[in-house]
Length: 327
Image 1 (tube, rainbow, N blue to C red):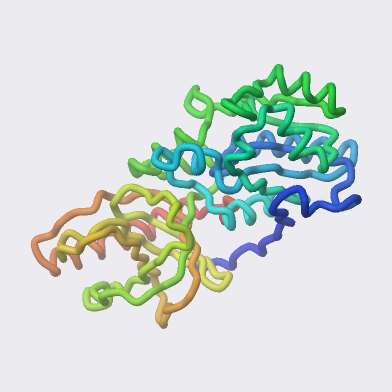
Image 2: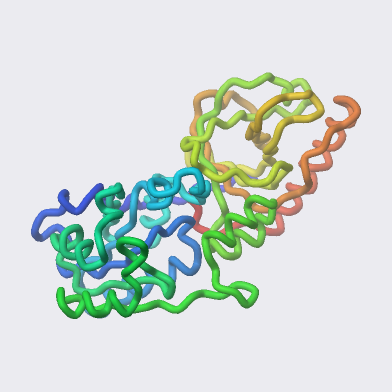
């Protein structure tokens, strides 16, 4: 059930506009936003930039923030991330943008009004067109609404274009909605709104070896970024990408209640794989949730259930081989 992985296109990643030099990005066409998840609504904004670039020339540029504003302004309420910086870089590369400017958001930037932000921070970029989502705001206390942006653009020489929302089940797609579905295990619905499989990245570290003793060895995954949102505890059908090859598998997220373990862990069993993965970097593309995490009476009952899980996941992945671009 293995498949060769896609070759990744790396987008140029610029950490701050001060790293931009004259001629680096001629006639910038800019999409701006936090873009957590790079869901279908975000992609609609970026596609508008790419379409304009195709018809009129110039550079297709994404301007985003790193860290996210809420991580600085309200860290205690800041939600876990759908995409880490590295995941975002790979996804943007797959879309074909020329460069991403990741603005270093801090308290000083937060204190700027919208006009000051565009003059002081983005003035060096020299953009000609700005594309934003229908609910975009910028500047101190979100004072830069869409009408304000249009006035600023007229003064500074760039046009502002507002992109309508993309709907899913009658409501606008948003990162907040997707986080809710990931948290409650609704991965299939989350993937529909993302337009790609929700994925996690990490390095295989040594575990307890219980999976091997059950006949289903698992790779224990240490995630690259602690800010990454974990899905609800349970068992999932997944594709695991290792060294460019995509392999079918199942993943357990949770506390392993049968063994009385403490703390959440991420463990992946890769079907039909024989070998050692310790130290390997894996990408796990989550296709769907199979069941909640359960406590079993003993290891025999758990082994039987894992066998059922593997067979169900194998059938599901055979039917729904993903063709989505995944980080």
